[in-house]
Amino acid sequence: MASALLAKKALRQALAVGAHSQATVGRRSGAVINSTGSSRRTLASVKDVTVNVTFINHEGLRITVPGRVGQSLLDVAQMHDIELESGCGGGGAVQQKKHSERWTEDLFGRGPCCHFCHVKIPSPWINTIHDKQPATEKEHELLEEHWQEEATDNSRLGCQVMLTKNLDGMQVFIPDGPPADCP
Image (cartoon, rainbow, N blue to C red; front, side, top):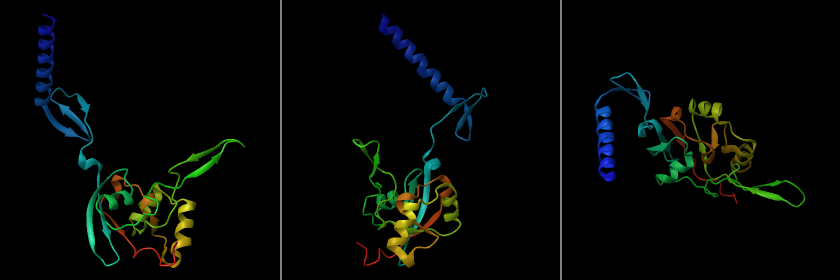
């Protein structure tokens, strides 16, 4: 008897959900508007989190690939087998924080630790990135130390640039690998 009541209740709920979805008349900015005028939030669509990036190698070969908001340029390149080297895998440097004489803590993912994922980003994209994600002092040091004359104001490390929706359509130039005398 109890199972029959539960089955009826589940059927009523399923029918109510179906009726509600049939009454949906429009979408606006991530919300679903139904015929009664009420709205409910929906999950972000793939389109809302997809960012298209065009990688251009030193030979001029262009490839446009999709990435996701929150991924680094290095992540996107590796996901699509684009040749962008990474000595540290994009994980960031391990730094030690000294709390006391006896306790030192290892902190992971705290900034860049290699220079291999050097990219050049043209204007206006670099300005958009610098506004929200300025390069750290450590990133500047790595670029200047290892890329010397090749580093410009448009240079960044691919592991340090995170995709945002306003970077959709961005172009990224990949230089011809690290200088031969790099360790």
